[in-house]
Amino acid sequence: DQGERYLDLYGGHAVISIGHGNQQYGQAIAEQAADLTFYSNSVINPLQHELATKLGELSGYEDYNLFLVNSGAEAIENAGTLLIEAGTGTGKSLAYLTPIVASGARAVVATATIALQTQLVEHDIPQVVDGLGKSLKVSILKGRRNYLCLQHLAELNRADRQEQLVLVGGRNHDVGIAAIKKWAETTTEGDREELDPAPPPDVWSAVSVAADECPGASRCPEGERCFSERARMAAHEAD
Image (cartoon, rainbow, N blue to C red; front, side, top):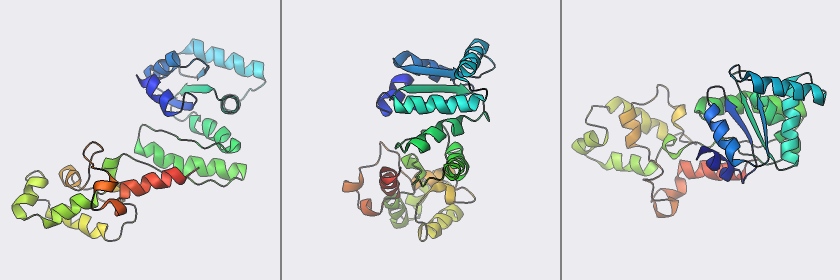
């Protein structure tokens, strides 16, 4: 299922980075991909590592990251699929970002964590863009629950004291609610990560919405100002 999900997302062709310890995803994707190039330097896959090393030597690339970059470029050029499975800090991100940026191809990079999203946007992508002398419009898109729901906030504001307690799980969260109300007056992105300290889970649950609970922008009174929809539009316009 994971293999089909990733390949469907990328139209059957993708450059996908799999972290160390997530080999099951790599295997699932490999079983679904007909034109798959596989590279691994995982210490628990010595045979695969030896194979990649030999391929690198045969290709004339003693620097294995350079080998990965060229493999990524070939996958993009041939509309193929490249699967990289390696440990943390081994340069996977730079290895797949470099050929993507160099090719000018439009790309979606899906990450398992928000922390990795931040690392890519604040460090890795600027490093590659600057190194190649390119310009790039980048956007972060998170799950809907990560954005403030203005409609739910309005409902919380209209609720009486008893109703508010029910919405926030029966606890007194006056301080947390007040902080969100004040932040909502100035935020332009509505991203929960902007709040420091982070709001209590019960409070954030009351002012955000899950994808399966959202009626959609066209049927929501706050649809035109929806932060989640704005983020999706920004992602649609990004490179």
